[in-house]
Amino acid sequence: METIIKALEVGVSSVGWHIVLWDFIFVSLLLIIGTILRSKIKLFQRWLIPNAILAGTIGLLLSNNVLGRLTNGLVYIPFSENMVSYPYHLLNLCFCSIPLSAVEISWKEFRHRGISTGLCISFTQAMQAAFGVGLALIFIVLGFKLSPLIGALFMFGYGTGPGQALAIGNVYENLGLFMGGGEIGLAFGSFGYFFAFLGGVPLLIWGMKNRLTVEEHSLDDLPDYVRTGIIKDDKDRKTAGRFVSSPEAIDTLSLQIALVFTVYAISFLIYVLLIIFLPENVSIYLNGFLYMICTMTGILFRVILEKTGKTYLIDSQTQNRIQGVLTDFIIVIAISAISIPIVWMYFTPFMTIAILGGFFTLFLSVWLHKRIFTDYYFERLMMNYGTHTGTAMTGLVLMRVVDPDFRSPAPFNYTMGMPLALIVQFVIALLGGFIIYINPFSLWTGVLYFIILVVMCIIIWSVWPALGLWKKYKPFWKLWPKD
Image (cartoon, rainbow, N blue to C red; front, side, top):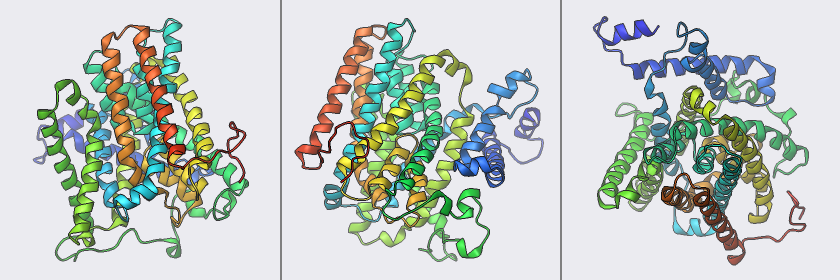
């Protein structure tokens, strides 16, 4: 196969075949295989495993990292070296689209709905970073040659997604702070998707059995098409979007995609200007936070359209579909591109932090939501837990099981809370790089970073009662207190 691809690329066929095209052909075929497996195998249906996770797992097993090594390079899917870069750009595009799909963006809505969600995201991710760095320090004391920044990469992988964790890991790697940082960040992001559903589905079952949702649901009541993933009956098929343009002029999907890429182009220009004007020791981190610029630009772009009365150009449903497509491809590519040799170098600490950190995120999320929100507790829990182990679309997938009609304001609140959370993420990355850079191989710089993260958690947590947004349920350790 690799020989055929190379022959096509040099022009045997009079039409150019670039390796990027082959990568997406392979990923598409894997998605088809994943779709078939989900529709046929009861185990996958019972656990609601997304087709993209099945596809990505198969892609990893058939890649050069696994099958290629087992067959001495004779048989494998010849993914290109570009595979590790795709999740970064696809996730940036997803963050460009999220603000465009919002119902309304205003300071009033942020003040009333976004602050608590923003604090929730910020607190959870700061706690994830502190937990990961704390575990890393234990391994360092035990004699492992390890950077405490692996704990920060755990947070970025689970809390922001594989693309951004890859970018932050590359920054740390380029600074000489973490060997294989990009691949480890990508691996954390990929592993997070597994934990989103292996932890999320039991959480769904628990919530439904205890009738914690606003509307009573049971997994036994789920329609067959939700389990199989295929909608066969016309009456169950919903509209995927609305026309906002005349097809004779431009297809609505084309217009919506063009808007997303326009936001990305503006975001990149802002990114370049910031690199020019900011100090080098700060601007080097911007590559890992281009998604933050994309989000802010998308919000500003949406506000301008609202102020000028041009929001009719946006269809939120179509933007949601764009995010869904991007997320599916991100998951498949991120899992398929995991570097087994790099992960093996850090296998014990990586698996320990990934698994224990996943359970920590699960229990922290359950403990937190009843105490900081006034309505739709469980729906918000599923949305936020999904985003803290995958991406926003992962949260939407989990929330949709208990709220298929999107009655909960959780997705909209997440959009409004993102600016606050993005600032906290940037501070965590920046502080980690600055402090560890003082002495990358000193235990005490890691301890200092851990202490600062704990202080950040305390400061963020104290804002809730200061604003009157915290409910003092007792006992303190009860996961889901009763009203």
